[in-house]
Amino acid sequence: MRLGLMASGDGSNFEAVVRACRQGPLRADVALLVVNKPECGAMQRADRLGVPVQLLDHRLFASREALDQALIETFRSAGVDLIVMAGWMRIVTTVLIEAFPERLVNIHPSLLPSFRGVDAVGQALAAGVRLTGCTAHLVTPEVDAGPVLVQAAVPLLEGDDHGSLAARIHRQEHRILPLAIALAAARLRG
Image (cartoon, rainbow, N blue to C red; front, side, top):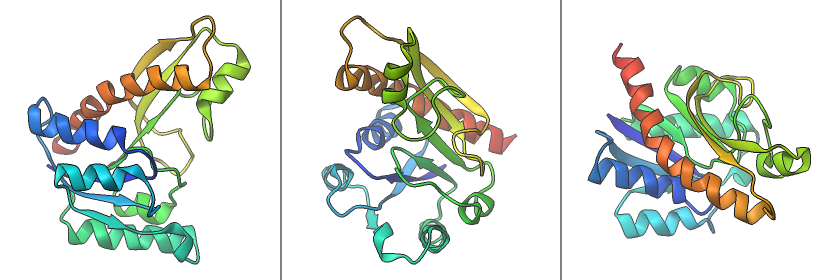
């Protein structure tokens, strides 16, 4: 299974997937990382890990659909079987979703369907919930609403702030994302 990953930030989920491929248990190869910000930390991680990286700066495209068309061409050229949105901070359109049906996996920092969209950690803190977490799911046109592959619960602790809660959620994301990729791949093999 050849994976294409998408990242916008630090790239810790990207690195967790690469490590799972290289050290087990994930039987796949990361063929390409695509980033949308030239300054994102994921690029440095890709260089250090020897993974090819492609910059598609979203600010240089006339529309979300134009960016998604460029993503399609990039991933098809790399022979990618499954795409993983590992901290991709852009909403994708039906252009990309329909080009890779049931082949797009996203990681989101909440127990979906709770706290969809932007700043799920902040939403959980504001709501005063006792339990939040993360969800890996297939991507559908409705944001953060696709079929759930794997979830992990994370309790809110007394004194938690955005940074401490986000750090604990990230540790769980690193754990469940490789499992979700394996489950998505198994669904494709049927």
